[in-house]
Image 1 (tube, rainbow, N blue to C red):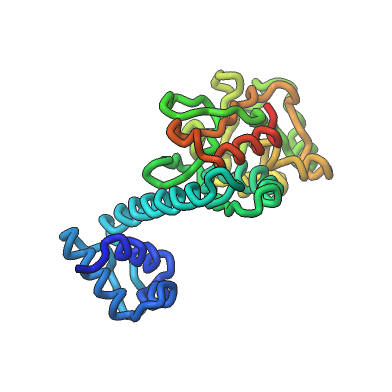
Image 2 (cartoon, rainbow, N blue to C red; image 1 turned 90 degrees about the horizontal axis):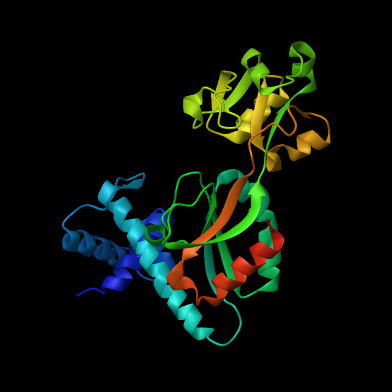
Length: 291
């Protein structure tokens, strides 16, 4: 009977490497042996996990679900081994972080080299996504979340607030003038994030003060590009617009009348309080990102 744990490892390697050959090379096995493990997995589970053609392979729905579970389980096993080896010694092992795209790519990523230099035996994997992730199902050690926290089963540690800013290009303001109050936004072109207010635009202070969203996107960088080209007024995180505000390509409007800063928290499971690597990461990020 084939080793079930090895079969799970090989399955993950096949998915991430893109082929049986890649997995075989990684584990120093023959390609036929990897194929036997995949066939045994599918037979045991009673369903297809991978659909393979001569050119490519892709996961079935069941395969995608099984892949996520296997990845989480293998990460837990690796973590347990690493923490046990490092018990009473240096901070070591893999730390997996999930954060929103803008915050993760523009703020968090720039801080992580300092953490890794402080703890050279730690490896970091940063995943940026605006989709809500599950700590347990997806095997993350910590999540960064913007906005109120409603899950009391998780530990929340505050970071610096998430500040938003309204801005437009000098060319746009020269053509349309600068709004003096939020009510003036009704006469302006507002560049809207498609997930906000159904793509109509955005509201300030909890009130329905919407501009005419002539352009919507699901991506802040696209909205920034549109604003730089004179397409309208943008409402986006300050960390995304700072460079353009500093060199004058964008000009802040309605200063002090935008949305209140939103809370930012690090979230992790209560049963992970004893993890040395997690404690080190949380301490470092709170030090760097004081509220």
